[in-house]
Amino acid sequence: MTKPHVVIIGAGFGGLACAKALGNSDVRVTVIDRRNHNLFQPLLYQVATAALSPADVSEPIRRTLARYDNIRVLMGEVSGIDVEAKQALLADGARISYDRLVIATGSEYNYFGHPDWHKHAPGLKSVHEARQIRHRLLLAFERAERSTDESEKRRLLTSVVVGGGPTGVEMAGAISELGTFMIANDFDSLAHDQFRVLLVEAGPRILAGFPEDLADYAANYLTRIGVEIRLESAVEEIEATRIRIAGEWLPAGSIVWGAGVKASPAAHWLGVEPGAAGRIPVKADLTVPGRPGIYALGDTALTLGADEKPLPALAQVAKQQGTYLGKALRAELLSGRTPGPFAFHNRGNTAVIGRNAAIFDFGRWHLKGRLAWFLWAIVHVWLLVNFEKRLLVSIQWVWRYATRQRGARLIDEDAADQLRSVP
Ligand SMILES: Cc1cc2nc3c(=O)[nH]c(=O)nc-3n(C[C@H](O)[C@H](O)[C@H](O)COP(=O)(O)OP(=O)(O)OC[C@H]3O[C@@H](n4cnc5c(N)ncnc54)[C@H](O)[C@@H]3O)c2cc1C
Image (cartoon, rainbow, N blue to C red; front, side, top):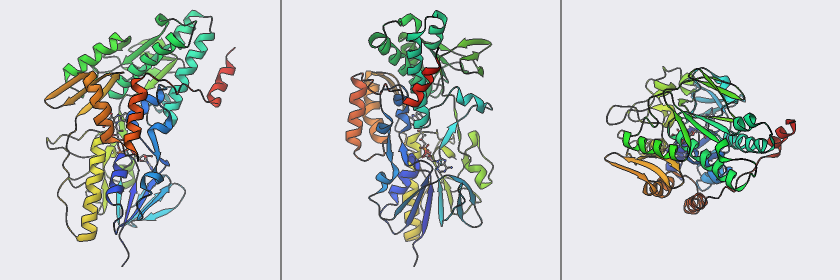
């Protein structure tokens, strides 16, 4: 008898957890991803701010799944699904047949109808974007060091972070620390009062998803380390060297986007009506209504929690759903058992604001400061990371961060070429 075939699209937090739960079973599994590596997105901002290297936050998918004999990994971009023929369609024309299909394609940044802003204000979704941001920040400092024009110096040393959610807060804090470090240690002709970091938020407060006391702590901490917070300030226009916020043009050396995500276009592939943020509405067992044998999870799926509110787009949700679905498919395909519904166990919500400063929302418990940072570093990173040797990797991350190493202050040669265009 041929073994049932499960195809998983996307080897992020959810897809990998699902594959692992099906590992070394009598189910054939094919994992398809357009990247060859799994990316630990929660630490991408540290790559963008030169604290970590790309290889510290990514691991080849083949390596992660090498120990499972029943799992095949394919690198390829899925561009559609033939629901009738039960096939995933790849952009290069290949078709991969499935008995069960798991869609775990995550999300992308939402530029709210202005896709052209992306080139001036990259988000933090890939190694490429993190490196782009790092190059822009470091190049701006190099150019400022050489500039003799005071206003140009100030422009180059101004960074604007759009979006006051966890990513924006983490980025603003990390840029402020990086700039302060470089001005103190690396650049003789730059002064701290020429350096500016702005965090721009359209809503009335930052960290809207966190309790108010924790958001207040974060705002105070950021202000203390020199970040200017602009609330109720919508971004209206972005160009290469400036940004218009609430009617005012601000010259800027680097702009970073962190203002909300939308799901991958998978709802469109299935021809289903997308829910909020383009997510695929799924039932409690993660099946897509009206599409037998197809499941969706993680950022690209819209699942309701016990309180009937949508579960947030978080790694811990994706990872728990992946493990649940892998086990459920294993039980269903190999023993004919129907699994119960998925139940999310909240491990707490956290954001890092700076070195040794974080907030941790655990329902009734609200932690802030050094203890919250320590908990984030140990528990959150440990719980989320998919990598082999995760103890070693976690210790390395925490050590580098705690010792203020900014060892990844590298500008690639192709990015350095841009400097040649400076008169
Ligand atoms: C900067 C940042 C910081 C974050 N910090 C935290 C945090 O501290 N805590 C937390 O819980 N969450 C955090 N998140 C959210 C978390 O990263 C996501 O919720 C999580 O990655 C979702 O997992 P997923 O499996 O749904 O998608 P992902 O992990 O994004 O994986 C999707 C995978 O699908 C692949 N893919 C996409 N489209 C295709 C296609 N067409 N064909 C083939 N492959 C495809 C991608 O290459 C990727 O490997 C953060 C996110 C960002 C961007």
